[in-house]
Image (cartoon, rainbow, N blue to C red; front, side):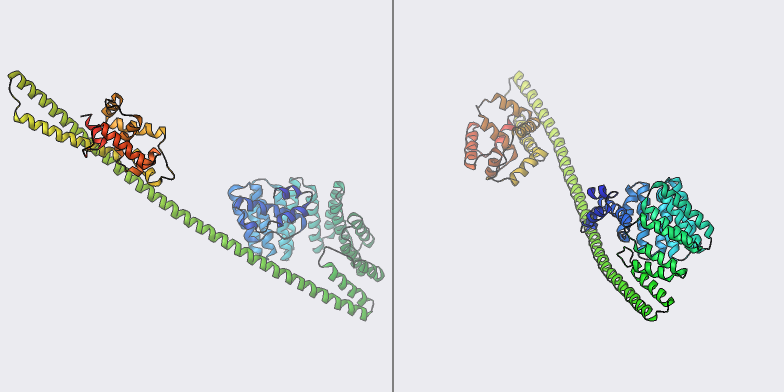
Length: 535
């Protein structure tokens, strides 16, 4: 599309070819597709080709209304109106033209407003409303004048002149055509001069100025030598209308040459029929008439084939658009379901996390209560021991009961601290890592992970740090790691994953650590022993 855009002005044929090389433009995203429609419309306009289909231009206009400039919206409205006209849908075409024209006038986009009025005039020409056709061409001329588009202004005057000829206002028609001729001559536009000269010749022909008409037609030959057949046929018609049959026959025969006009070949044959009929050569006239009907039938068959191909293209386009819409609907449904599931999972996670935090808070309250109770019991037993010492009494039975109670509360405190750690987010992350990991694909703890784990355990059980730092039992670094991992309550395989070693090595480390902590013949856990040092 970038390359095509560069060719639009200088080489529209190449631009048109490049744009047609995009096999399924409807599969482009909305922004790219809208740009394709705009470029295709510009190229087709310069080459007198059909516009994209209505369904395509509607999609493009919808995008430009949301994201485009007013000028882009107006041009796309013009192209859509022309596409409706190609489908002989006059009412929708009129509505789209009118909307685009209102926008153009509101935003002072006089150039595009002039083109819209010109095509609206063509619509009225097709429906036979000559007065409305002239009104729209007059509006177009005013807009082109404001936009300082001299070339289009001259063509608008030419088109107004044509409507005046049909209303027998030949003097006004001549004045307008002469003005248009002077403008295009000043611009030195050969194509424009050829078109205006041909129109001027038609006006002179309508008022019987044969020599002037002939001169204008000959001028059109010299200005535009690419397609001479219509000019020759116009001269033939001029001479036929004035009963100069030899000249009419001469130019009718010269019109038998290649042309871009689809109707010129059949019109040439019909003109031959009229000339020979007027010359009383019935046999030759009949031959021309037969050839004329064959040419008309051939043109009809060709157009019918084009219509069939066009119908197939429309069907394929409709199928692509239908599939795209279904795909968009499916994607919307899938996205909606995915979003819903994510929201549900998020709510469930938050609810689960909230329960975890509530659990931790409740455990902390119970822990605070137990530690306060433990402090009170210790104070109480110290007071009793002090009194007994002063009196020289032996230990009473109630002191022994208090010691037993202290021991029981200590066990409860240990259990609460261990339980509280199990509900922390860090513990859950580390345990998840063990579940996802494998001995063949170990996910050992990094230094950052170790720092976080140690800080968490030390914050929950402050005197554990004191015990480890003092290290009265001579624990090695590897044995200290076993001590901290014991708080996670993991098995051999899981600890092996976190340490990045095999299970046998983990088992040996555990045994050495328990031996140094004097826990060989007891079921007391390493973490329980460490917490007990804080009591």
